[in-house]
Amino acid sequence: MPYYIQRGEVPSKRHIQFLRPDGALYSEEVFGTEGFAGPSSTLYHIHPPTQVSGWRALHSTAPEYVETDVLRMRHLQSWKFTAKGDPVSGRRVILGNADVEMSLCQPAEQMAYHFKNAQGDECLYIHFGTGFVRSLFGTLAFKPHDFIVIPRGTIYSMEFDRLADSDRPTDTTQTDMPYGKFVCFEAVNGSHVLPPARYVSKKTSQFLEDAPYCERDLRVPHMPLSYDERGSFEVRIKALNRMHSYDFDYHPLDVIGWDGCYYPYCFNALEFQPLVGMVHLPPPIHQVFEAHNFVICAFCPRPLDFHPKAIPIPYNHSNIDSDEVMYYAAGNYKARRGIEVGSISLHPLGIPHGPHPGTIEQSLGKTHTDELAIMCDTFRPLMPTKEAIALDDGAYPNSWKDLSRKDLSVKDEHFKRLITPTGPTFSR
Ligand SMILES: [Fe+2]
Image (cartoon, rainbow, N blue to C red; front, side, top):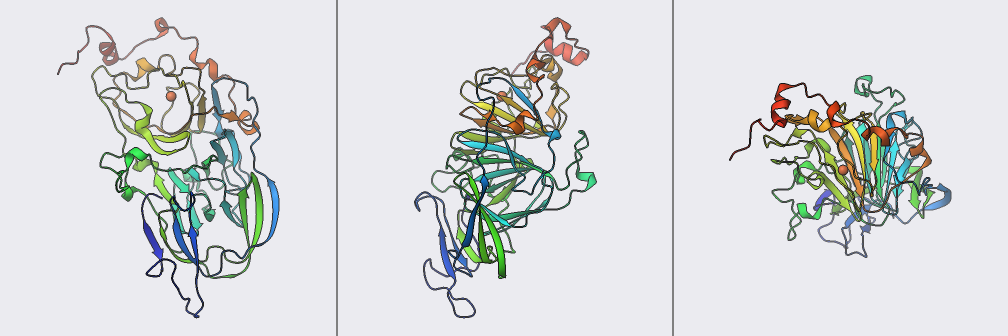
């Protein structure tokens, strides 16, 4: 929702008569937020959007957290995750708090209904798979490493293509993946998932020249937009921590045109323009989105720090007031013990974290990284669910133990020069 666009047909002014070809009026809907003072769009429906019936409550959507008093690092082996449900019913929350819920989904079937999340914005990260999001605002084609931001209230369905064998992960044993796999970050505190405020002009909301992405990198909805069909259509609405089913007697994507600043869009993580420093730069340089009390970052392939004595991996650091979740999406993680593509690490507030023993020395002299990881930092502790415990690698907290520095062997002559006092020094 960063900037104004228009799709389809709209009348010349807001709130005036807009006639269908048969002479009847289109039904205008102002799709507003924050008491009509926040981002909004104005939609024109073939049918009045108020015609809903047949409602019934289906099931609770409130996560059940466990081990809420346990403070420890976690490693969730998400390659053990199995296919289940469709792109909505198959979502299983693994970590969450009062601000954000993080779920995994590996669909086993297509959606036979449309969905509206009336509780919060969704930010999906597509790890594997391609397909389409068909929404009130038009169609989005998605591909691996796309973030799909779907603002609260949007009616949509997700349609995955069947995953080709050549597109499956090759470095894990995960085979139960008929369509793909994605991560969902859902804002559950009423805030919106937005580009960081510091990336856009305060005066015009245009992306600034030093922002790591801009309007051209955002893929906005395109046609087809409108389905003029009569029949029986189910729309499932998530609200009040419960899924509800509603019956529509017309296709719910019946918008003939709309304009505004509130709509879903895609941004591919590989379009992020990483910043690189002479010495190591902190995680905020990797930030892609933010909402109240959490941020989403992408660590993308990039050149590494260029000081001759740079240590090109993170220093030990304390999340004094935040929890940190990393989802390792692509690249070579062999330098991190036990971490593979599909690993999820949770480093909670209260315990410092950093490179595994020996990995600092191994990193010296490296000039680039091919890693791609997605991070969510939260300002309140994250709790695991039973789904997370089922993926938990209990040995992970001990993976920082046991190597003393004298056990480290620096075999490469280049690395030896870099870490000895007689090695090259940096001069201006
Ligand atoms: Fe960290």
